[in-house]
Length: 135
Image (cartoon, rainbow, N blue to C red; front, top):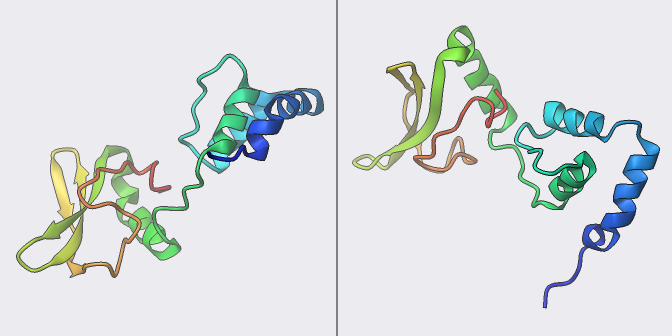
């Protein structure tokens, strides 16, 4: 049997505390969305519930490390609004990976690198948006 978390146990009390101590739980929600996790969703009638449910989710670290994020941010800067997706792909003949960025109907293909050496947080063949990658 799985043990109850503190968040589960104290959920009602925490909701009350957030409502009483903060003028606007929506401000807390918006701050989380702007600075911590743009993927947080508003699903319920109460922002306090959304905040606490988000807190109970598994922590997912950054997908890209600092250098990877900085490099990709600079590369896409001139046409960021036109980027449709970013993927890590494999050249199966050479057993090497590469990054491919879709810009409109065109693709930017980056030089290959040895598997498992760069962009380790990206899943192969998964299409990411710049927002998901924090770019």
